[in-house]
Length: 529
Image (cartoon, rainbow, N blue to C red; front, side):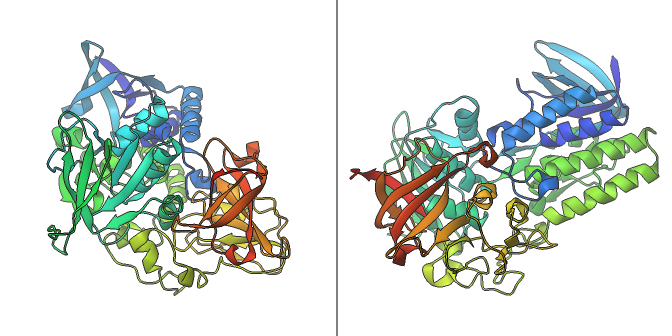
């Protein structure tokens, strides 16, 4: 039997963060992970994170993963891959299958950071090849460079469904529809909006009736459901697809904790069977801690903070730091975690219908039902501005924890304030210089630079663009509205790429002046003049 001060199960964002924090305090730490590569979900996440600077906001997930791995290596953390922990027993003993052998380990403290597994739903044909989970689609695209399908229907409008739908579009797939049985979109409105403006239709209060095909998916039928989630006859809709992608939630992988004898509870708000633990991750068994999705489904940003908390708690439990040092560090982490748990999407608001923003502004009902803010709703939000010359237009309409735009603006034109869930506003006394740093920094791709006086009859719009091939200056095409509908011809007048933009290119188009506040995406294809 080999012994360690601390054994961490899971090399994802929470597990690595816990191991790093503990190793820095002097603990001898090992991390076991069943996968062939460490980093967990981070290396599938090519989008930019939300939050503030301390939460690694505006940094793409895979880059955060690279940073954590480098930090773990520097701290002396031992990471063992292709290592499946198959048993957690009394006295904190583990059995681990590494290749074809079973090994026996004992830890003075244990942190379980096994994450969560994808949920599935059953319908006629759900076992056909071509029905895949959203996480599987991300693995194919972002880890292995494999296109999951050509024509895809997405089931699920939470953040996972919205983010993966956008990544499918980036991969070159045709996302024919985004479907959800719920009557309202479950994820961030900015994620829904960037999907909607590409032309993907949303079908809320709909779900899958059946997948069609003999030996693989060739089509899918959906239908509207009533308030009891029963199919409404006559509302069926058919789509020709070769892939059905499911993003219908996650369940904590808490089996090891149950095996160890930790007190568990069935908590739907936390995702299912989870251990009862204190605010810093200690379970009912002293010396066994949890971090990340295994203790309740949240975002990766929260998981990393929870991991650091568990690492500190374990360090104090084993006597490597005293309570004063632990509490000083934990207090700062508590504040950072609490900031992420505020706003409309706070855990306390799960399942609630929010009618107004924290500022008292009516929530866009069109956004919740169709994925985009309607033209007659957009002007009510404080980020929508009109002035001479170039100026930012921020279509951030929900209280989500995010403030990179405030820090990105060199002229301090943008203000969010002390609470990172506040809606952004433009300081009318400050002059925008059109640098585009706010556009590139926005994790939700919700900021545009608009010049309503670009020419006598034309306005210019600078928008975030993350598709290849990049358009070129002089290209002509169609400007699409927030709903993805073609509204006018547009000409590309500038394309900017910079290392500071981190792969978010700035595409500037020229449109007739009356479409300055309506055109939000560019679709090429018209013959160049």
